[in-house]
Length: 91
Image (tube, rainbow, N blue to C red; front, side):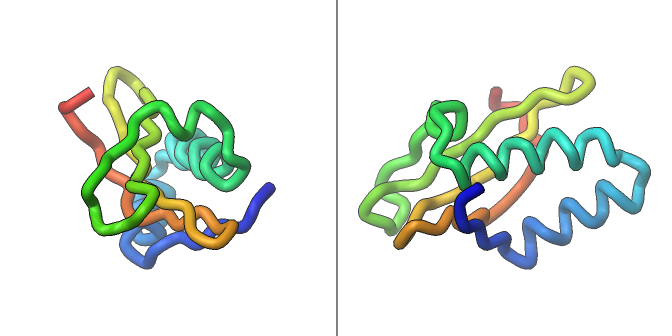
């Protein structure tokens, strides 16, 4: 697996989900984080441009029990930086 840094905000979401008994969702989100760290094509399906970085940002969309969740990340100097994790109605 490549290098990854997870923001305190994203880490807090994972911790809250874990504490509330959603270990299976945490596992799915951690898989998505691994995709980003490894440069997997699944992590690059949704690109955001004009977000203040030269390469833009990426969204990894995962599904869990009929809900869509996104992992927002960027890649800088060989490191995947996870900026946020949230449930969304947009996908």
